[in-house]
Length: 169
Image 1 (tube, rainbow, N blue to C red):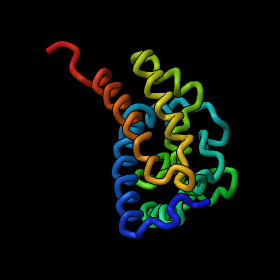
Image 2 (image 1 turned 135 degrees about the vertical axis):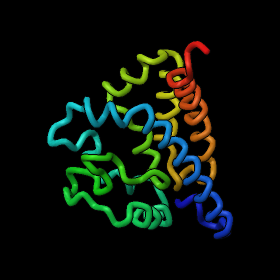
Image 3 (image 1 turned 60 degrees about the horizontal axis):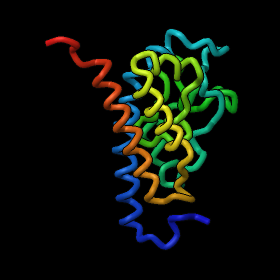
């Protein structure tokens, strides 16, 4: 059953707006921590990385699917079901605001090791928080999905601070 049924459209729109804002922050954190690694160190075949299916449509509302098309400027990879249509081999995912939870939460084993090498405890906390984000589903959790983002953002920002702040002033 759709968790959104019965919510007034303005409330639903506000939740989707907050979702996009939190997703953009989380995507920025992930970009800082992972994009160079994925681009230069990924060992997956055919240069498609782990984005090997159209996961973008799992667990999101029709409104978010519509916003994905607008956000991506109609970009499609043309690889069909064997690569996500929003994945670019040169720049990664084209979605930053309306990426589905399952996509933003996925980190392959080598990427998890890469993140943990900066700080094992914070890395584990961040990875676990991302796993909780990945379990979130608009149709089941509705507006409660936003709380899962907060933990991932908190641990991600702490990890970024540890990695990118000057060591000695």
